[in-house]
Image 1 (cartoon, rainbow, N blue to C red):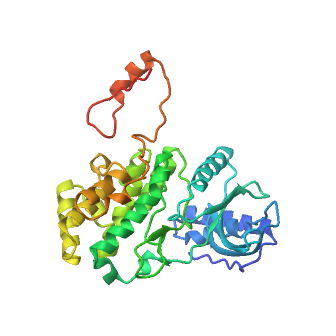
Image 2 (tube, rainbow, N blue to C red):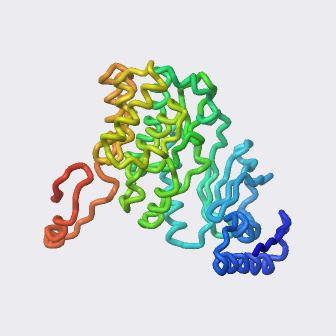
Image 3 (cartoon, helix red, strand yellow):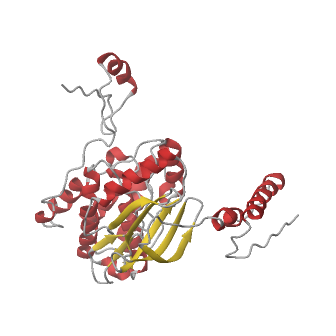
Length: 363
């Protein structure tokens, strides 16, 4: 049985009919267990989403991307007199709205030259959080010719600029969690200085279910996100490791991610890097694998530690490390819970950095 509905684009007048149509399609899917393109099922909800701001600052709105959860627009900012990108987060949940605004405000304080600037954090007239941010005109990393990445110096300088950009955010006990070849931009094909675009940035809510879904469906997400573990700085380091592996080898890392044996993973990753880029020094190849350790306790602990490794092997000047903010040991705030509760809980709590249970007592 085939059921076809034609929904004319741009027709947002008859909201009731469109919503009923969406429900009918969903019922057909469940009844006959047929596969329908997700975009077809969600098109009714997407089409009925309107955008309205509380002021007239943003004009000439152009839709770049639509999804069930967010709306990416290009707009002219009359206050800045330039084009910006706007992401509207489609949620009516007050707790989630508050979380998004808090994380966005923290990101806006970065003021890092290597991260796209956040210009505005607010809510729309429909009470939906949004961010307005810099529209980077740089070249996405996944469009740069591969021969450019055969130079060890180019790779080290690009990686150092990415890591330096993340250090201030990690020091705030936060991880960016949106890194991919498309989000890393270069000024031109010969420039090793990278900038991070925020086109795909979305705060990952603190609940385990959201993190697990994100970790299971994002090929650049650290494996611990799919294991009900809270993210920290090492999740971003893992994403950078995948990006470097893919641009050097030209091969997707996703197949490697399914290798269970740590020894076999090490062998395959190191062999692939050496086969595709024989000019890379062994210290750099080992460093890239250090970012890709499946067990995060075996990964580099922080941006500073990763950069110190490069400096210790003569791949990076020591001056780059000066001024790097040190990320905290844990991204989970410690609260006073009382001695009885603490001793009762210590047998069930393990530090991610050691094998034995740890109890920290202050005061």
